[in-house]
Length: 420
Image (cartoon, rainbow, N blue to C red):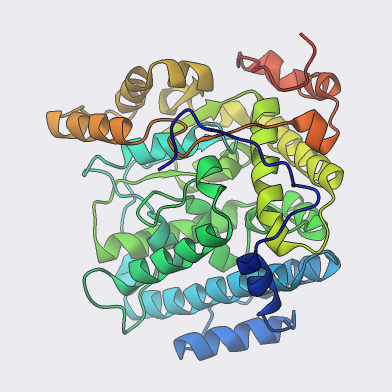
């Protein structure tokens, strides 16, 4: 484990110095054919199933695939990654449809007042949801279960074979990208984003983290996401049928830009929304993406990456400002990142009060143990340079996000190279 005070400077984002393991991984993957038929045939072969349910998903899958094809800088491993994700989601769709067809009562399961955390990437959502998830009265989406929500016929045993596969996969990923845990740890048993449950319906902003899918970004922005929230709810019901409890705690950044869809599908939802300086969010998020891109892309254009995500975060925040009042005041609170970091227990208590959830001694003790075991920066602290690495004008960026600073009193965090 890295010293908690260790500073990490990644100085080769634009021109990566690849390790032998990274070169070997890039050179070892076969060529990929990006067609809907290729994805669906691979999913059928993986599962032995054939019925995908309603066919509307095929249009969205086609847009995903064309977006990946349009991204000409995706390298061999990047292409293999996005194709593999499509096959994984299609396989889950097959298994989910098969399960729900055989057990129609699943559709009647009540998802009771779910706690659905929204907030920018890198704004504390992951930490908050993992803290809340230690309470045994709440059901959550650990990484291993979101990767493969519906078990196959051979997924029997303890530990669950899906956990073992996820542990091996993410272990290999972190072997290739050893600095990733310092930016975003992905332990198999940590709670992951519930938009993974929209993946089998081929929606959400999932493709944007592993490619530059301009075509998909614009398609997604132009379509109501309510049907895909409903699809994800169906998977939550399926997961609840496997084991309870029926009260969930989940999180995803895109909830911020889909508040009307979220509350339409989950009218009793409790929605804590975390808020953080978007400049600090961006420097963290795009550095993490750029670091991962060394194995995904043939060439890394850091200014393009910055421009893509500045636009993307602006779209998300404008939707949040516009639709914030779609969530009833009795069901939502705004959580400022700097206040959460200053007093985590007080913030957690606010969420419990909002959710009408008694803080029992067992839950309180579990939370204390989690906080003690997971201090901020325990894998080291990355030094970000938004201006030096990405060519971003910090002052202009702050002006661009003025509408958000005006709406929510987030603390502006000092960044490297900024005039004070």
